[in-house]
Every structure is written in structure tokens, then in C-alpha cells.
Length: 324
Length: 301
View (cartoon, helix red, strand yellow):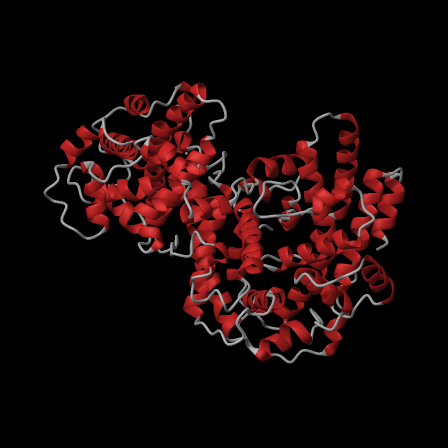
């Protein structure tokens, strides 16, 4: 289910907001089955997918030992039109893993036979981003299902987790004494939107139905303004009870996990060695869903790289990746 | 977008335009703003107006109907701007090797921010398109909230999130039958970050005098003395505008600055659309005025 209908869908399934104490047993969800479509009816949207893929890609790039093709597929920059940007938006895809693996096989064949690689680089980046992202999609989808089943609303979980991540990714406020209001921060977020639209230069409306596109975009802009207000509110005044319920108790994210600390160190430009990342992947895969999914995402991406640029057969590749 | 805003000012403050157009712009201003920033207006503007022209007075004027009509007007403004500027870019390209139309356009955008929006002190008329002095600024440093959050990191996440959401608003994302078809469509609609905002910031903060001469003054891009520009700026700044005869201003604009000519085209396109919408003009005549060839004339909504 895609965002446009998903938001409508979630409005229809409001469960109310009864406070329900969560059992630590919730931690047992997420079996790494990699079957996004079958296992979870919830596609995660918002900031989480971008932040996660960004962290995983940074760790993979810092760890090294991958081909130039994969380096380019994971190198993203909002200031440039480069294929690697597709990896960060891969959560727009909603296909079973089997289909994506077969598609990667097709890209590899085309890669070896075509002279122009332009589209293929973009497709490879998108597919690789999806492979990296798939595990946290499965796990977070399952977590959302359980929380919604216990009476919480999708939006309150998402806003809590996304603003938690926003605080994590911030290289700490540059001015520790700085304060601002929800209105000011919401405005800051909203000023970022025309900046983003300028980066795209021009909107490309739906060629199948431009009139509907106007309606969807209009509704999207209103919903986005509302979301920015909520992000700003939750960022300025974090709800500790919600963070406990939606982040810590269900084991969504622990700052103490080593792999998360390494991802953070890369973001702030601190020294991180390839060896540190390698040893952490083996000996300290972390306890939170986010950390475990990072480890799996990195392992899978490395397999994709080996398949795509090496001699591994498709059946070996798909067998090994499914085992992660 | 600035051309749409100025055309909307003309529509709202000139008697000749129908109540339908005025109502749609007033109620669904942002829909027009969004369409004015979109390609493909030639395909959709006339079919939308055609669909609703008979129904407007008959029944309920739903929000969705108004959004589409406002969208059509936004697209017409976009087309007016395109038809004014792009042939000129092409002409310069023919005569000057190394000419960059994209650099010229970004100088025009930076100039619009400086002149029309007073460096961000004046906002747009849409409460969803927020401009501020920090809009074209590194790290949005002058904004009062910029010290409360890492603007670079948070903007990066939001930029990708929005880009993904724009893709997800397209109908192809609902059809998961075939991954190859899906990815081909993704490539078509992926909304690449083709522009480097830092170049816009530089053109706004530290414009190169030679480029200003070449792209703005030498090009006669904008002249505050042009009556049509005075008309819209006066409305924007809550100053008297009634003394300016809009018909005469439009007539004079034919030989004035490029921006004035773009507004003149916008005026002609929207007033022709107004005649079509109110039954005073045939569809083919409107298509002729919009310079839309046969291949665009079979679309319906």
C-alpha cells in the first residue's frame, strides 16, 4: 500500500490512544523473514527509511572492500544529480525480496551487454537501497502492527520515532543554550520544502492523470504542513512516556548499540576505522531492532556487491541472501 | 511561480475575469501554485477547464473541482513564462557557445527572490510555500530555529523523504504487478536533484556583476517602470493600483521587459481561458492562442 492511499487508510483505522503498558516480550517480534508484502501490511514512511539507509550506506562506504559500482550506488548528495541518491528513496518500492533479487539479476545481465549504463546505475542504486532497507521495513512493520493492535495510532508512533531519530542525527545543537518555539521550528522545516523543490527544478505531474495529481499534491501539502508542526512539537517537547513506549521498551533503538555509535561517529566526522566496523558486525550486532537491521542490511549489501561484480551464481546469491 | 502569483493578482483585481476563476484562486490558491511549478501544463489545462465549464453553475463547486481549475490557471501561467523565456534562451544559445540557460534561469530566480519577494521579507500568498530571508542562505543560518537543530542533517533527511513522497503520489506506485515496469516508471518520475541550491544561494547572496549585466540588465529581464509590473507590485504591497489601466498596461507590455512580456502572455492566456470557460470562445481557438499543436488536443480528464 503506497503512501497516498496509506494515509487515507490509516485515518480509517484509528484505534484511539489508550495507554497500554508494553511487555518486554514485544522484543521478540521480527523474524527476519524478508517478506514485506506477506508479513506486514504497514509500509513505514516518514524519516525513518531515509535515516536508516543513510546510516547503513555510510557504514558500508566507510568499511570499504566493495566495488566502485557499489560505492557510486550508495554515494548520495542532495546537491548533485547522481545515481546514488536513488538508494535513499528506495522505500518507495514495495515488492517481495524474490522479485528484487531477480531484478538485480536482470540488471547484471543488462550491465554486461549494454554500452550505456546510465539507467542501470540508477536501477542498481534503487534495488541496493531496497535490499538494505528491507529488514527494518519488515521489523518496524511488525512492531507497528503490534503497537496499533494495542491501541496506539500509527502517527503517534511514527512522529515519536522520527523525532527521536532527528535528535539522534543532529550533531548536537550548535548552541547548547539555544531555544526555539514549536512555531519557529515548524517554519524552519517548511522553509526547507521550497528549497527541496528548487533542487528538483520542476514538478513532473502524473502523465496518466494530471488533474488528479493536482488534487493529490494539494492534499499532500496540507498533510505535510500538519506533519511538520507535529515533528516540531515532538522535537521541542519530547514525550518521555512515548519514547519509552515506542522506542526503548519495544527495543526499537538503543544509543548504546555499538553499530549505532559507529554510524553516529561517521555522521559527525569522528574517526571510524574499517576494522572497527568489521569486528562490530561479527562480535557485537547490537540489541535493538535498528542495530540488528543495520547489521543485516550491511551483510546483504556486501553480498549484492559480490554477486553484481563477481562470479557468484544467481542461485548461490539468492540462497545466501535469504539466509541472512 | 512568481508569474502565477502576479497573474493571480491580475485575475483577482480585474473585473473582466469570471467569478469562477476568482473563487478557485481565492479558495485553492496553492493548487495553482503547485501546477505553476510543474511541466506538462499543455496537456492538462484545457481539458480541465473543458470538463468543468458547463458544470460550474449547475451544482456543487467541490473543493476538488476548484483545485483542478486553480491548477489549470497555474499551468497557463507556467506556459506563459516558458513561451516567453525559452525561445530567447534558444536564440542566445545559437549565437553564443558556452551559454548556460540553466545559469541564466537560476539568476532569474535569485533576482525574483531579491526584487519580488524582497529577499524573503515578503512571503508568497500561499500558506504552504514559505519564504524567508533564510530561504537562500547556507544552513538557513539567520533563522531563529537554526541553532536548535542540525539544519544540514535534518534537511537532508526531509529532502529525501519529500522526494520519495512525491514519487509515491504517482499512480504507477499502486501497481506492483511487474517490477521492471515499475522501476522504468520510477526513473521517469524520480524528480532528480538536478539543481545545486548552493549556486542559487551564491547568485542571491553574491551575484556576479558580469552575470547580472548579462542575465538581468542586458537581457532587459525586469523593469520596475513597466506599468504591468507596477500594477502587480502595488497590489502585492498593498499600495494603490486603481490608477493603472490594466488593458493599456498589457498593451504596452508587448515591448517592455521580458518579465512584463511574460505577464502579458499570462494575461492573454488566462483571459482567453476565461472566454472559453464562459462560452465565448471555441476550444480550438484557445488551443491556437496557447500555441498547442494537434498532438495536445486529444487529452481529456
